Length: 491
Image (tube, rainbow, N blue to C red; front, side):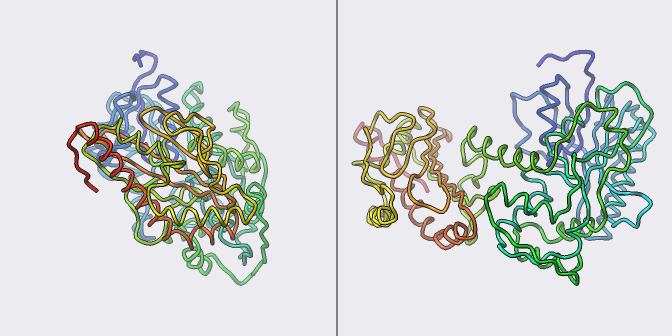
């Protein structure tokens, strides 16, 4: 990307966070030269094809901020340190003061800040109060307040999802009835980007939210409708945020300490009281129904567009007990390395099913086929059209090929009778002079029955898919030896 004099360097604090990580590619696409300060080098940001600059900087170290803010015209402040309550407040306050002072000393023209939505006249939780205190700088400040952001990976959305997916009956405390105006992540990003193009206004704080006022108690059934789930909510007035937070920690896999801060903040209405932002910005946020649908659709699009192990796998490292999750999906990933060419390794992974079989535990595959036929499915009786020339949409036993990149990746989708759906993908990548085979299985299991099915069979699936991956590597080795190449397998 060419550097234009009309686009001076832009500072993005929080590029590794949820909002900053999604704002970064939008800024680059718009032509900005982005400088990303990090406390330590993050591999996810080290992409030679991108135009951003990575530098070491810590908001709790004013000297490091002074260096990275030199020559910067615009700066985003999108970080909020977390930790124990007292330490959380102190770190959040110190980081904001350091950044404001460094921005003023460096001559930053415009500082764009994102904090929590709430009224300063109310007795706010320590979480919201300290987020709002960050809006103090001698530079021109354009602040935004938005508490409930709906997007995959955002804590408020993931908490709602976790409760609805796991609990068919929910005992709801009083805080779920507090009004809020959730905004979709895509619309929030549009507003942040639009703040760069505003004519030079005086410093101000903008309250932004979605089109509709709705409570967490309203978000839960709305999410359930999108997932076609039936959920019952029973109000319990004696449950306070302090009592309900430990209960949430038992239900969800999210960090219990962060949940406590979030639930503590939910006690206070998060609604827009000043409509100035609606006049100044052309972005018109939609309601929660559209935002939830967009969040779920974005997950599906991400899964369709990239290798599964990069999106939702664990880079081939398998956990000992509970399966990792991507959204509402259960994930199993594993890897195996062989001292052979990626082309040979890919050929073996592609030739699964049909006459070749599934390399491991074929008896269990036949048993599952018999159960599937008992349930009205086709089982494994359809075979495959050909071992070496499979094409998109071809059927392989109980699977259908839905993605294929020659020499790199093949993905199958199950057509067995399941309380949901499942995908199995093989990706081969070069590793020095060798090949690394990555296998990822993703189960999108519906409702309580689906989750019970997935969790109960997870241990068996690990054995089957793990043995299958190792057998594929062995098969690739045998094929290579037939061609006269001496190889070895490393697991």
